Image 1 (cartoon, one colour):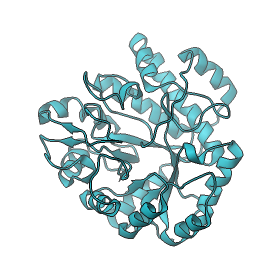
Image 2 (cartoon, helix red, strand yellow):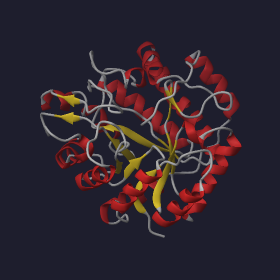
Image 3 (cartoon, one colour):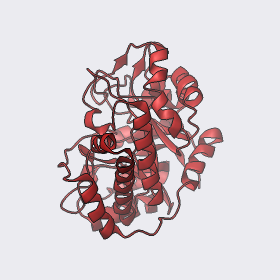
Image 4 (spheres, one colour):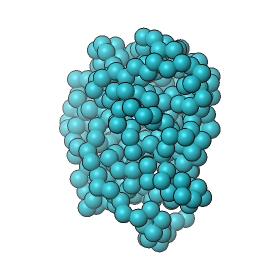
Length: 346
């Protein structure tokens, strides 16, 4: 059965009748879960099953933002809390081998949590490189300020997810670390020369260009496109994400309902797809907005379908894994884990 070029959220712990009809009719490529969709393991598993049944696709991708630290939709008491990305960076600075091992093991444990629920995609790793004075929306979600270090830790996290049968999503292409505003609320503008961007922000993504899925940044880079954020900029997607970085995976927008973008939801969706995004991500579960996204999202075809199909084909069965032993090892490696904090967007 054909699918449409969008990923959608839903409103609550189970589907409403209207949502079920919408999903059956509009056939999104995938789904994304948030805190509002999560109560107990049994409830999440039931919702995941219900989503797939609504589109009659037993392997329809179900996404979540499960990073650790401030951004983890699953948390205590039913799931472990995981550290923010900066914890891996701090360990890496003391012992690079140990830092990479902890990052990979943490991601493998996250994958085990997700696989138990039927969730098959995690919006992780982050390859953003913060700079002094940037907005704290990335902050301790980042692995460090050195591009090579960030790339190495991101690669370890991606491998841990893949070992657990979960697809990683590389974000936020081509870089959110230098943004001076939170794109959930406003449009960040980065006024830095192209050579500097290519040597820092963009270069962190290049070793990760082979990952199957990526997510754009709602950030304007004035040296390349003075008007449009990367999500809706044909120049940024073609010249930077596809050419300079070399990313050929399926590219999704960040959430089109975020405050950084202008215009109606339909206009934002159309602009992202026209710019070169393969898939549009809409997160807030508002059915009227979901309908507007669907109305302008075409059926997947051509290169977009090729990349989306290749991404799904990249998911492999989980490797054998002793979860309880790994949790003890991970705790010894990383120490205490910070409490979760609610956050919207990706």
